[in-house]
Length: 221
Ligand code: 5RP
Image (tube, rainbow, N blue to C red):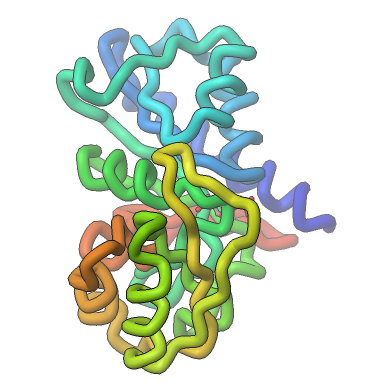
C-alpha cells in the first residue's frame, strides 16, 4: 500500500470518528499537510453536519473553501469541538513532532484551544523516540543567529529553511541531532529562548487521540 493511501485511510477514519459527535453548531479545527488535505476533502462531504472550521494555514483555508466549508477566525469561535491534524513523528506516549509544512505555530494554538486533538498518521510516522525528523522551530527573523547559537548549546544542529516564510512572517530553523528523551522539558526549554515563536514538539498539548493507518487496518491509541 502506498503511503498516500495510508494517509487517506487515516483521514477517512477521522471522519468516521468525529461524524457521530458533531452538532450543527460545532466548530472543527483543521491542520495542515498532505494527510490533512485528505481530511479536508472528506470533510466537504459532511459540511452540512457542523457549523464552520478554524484553519491552521492559508493553504488549508483555501482548500477548505474549495470544498465549500466555511472558515472563521479563531477569535470569533466560541470554542473548538475537535482539532484534526497530521504529524511528522509520534512516540509511544503520543508526544509528536509537527511543522514539516511550517504551520506549527497556528497548529499549536488551535490544538491548545480545542476540546480534543485528534492526530492522523500513517504507521511510518511511529517511532520509539522523537528526533530523527529534524525539529522545526519558528523564529522571529532578527533573532535567527542568536536562536541558532542557543539551539547548538542544547545539542542541536539548526539548518535554516531557505526561502521559506511562515504565514506569520517568520522563518524556520530545522534542528537535527537533538536528544528528545524528555519531550515536555525540551519543548519548554526551546520555547524559552528569546526570539522563538514556538517549536514543533507537541507534548504539553499532545494529541488526545491518535489514529494510525497501517496496511492491515487503522488503529486508535
Ligand atoms: C504541517 C504539519 C504536518 O501535519 C506534518 O508535517 C505532516 O505532514 P504530512 O501529512 O504531509 O505528512 O505539521 O506543519
